[in-house]
Amino acid sequence: MGAAIVLTVFQARMREDYPEWAVLIAVGFVVTVLLGLLPRLGEAVSVMAGLAREANVSSVYLTPVLKTIGIAYVTSFGVQICNEAGEESIASVVALAGKVVILFVALPIVQAVLYALLGILNQ
Image 1 (cartoon, rainbow, N blue to C red):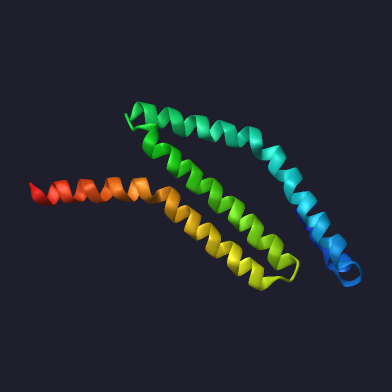
Image 2 (tube, one colour):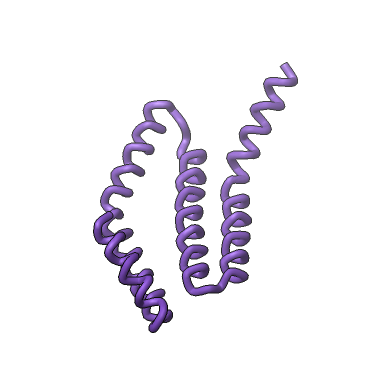
């Protein structure tokens, strides 16, 4: 958090004189933080997979959930970078594309939930 605060103050000054460098520095910082968090992310995925095994949940359902979370994070990152660069229209398209991709990835789960509901209602 300390590095983020220092970088934010630095970015405010940098953006006035060198906006393109400010964006590149922000991207570099985010990539560095994400690379530092990757080992922890792997641990979180392992814990979720273990919980799914214990609950007898098929990977058919866990995989789309994990993909959806990943797509949401990547989309959010892309939107923030576009906004940082002053490209709000591109940011809107990136957000829309992310939502559409999430919809397609989540379709098997939505389908399974609807079939389960129909099965309950028909009994």
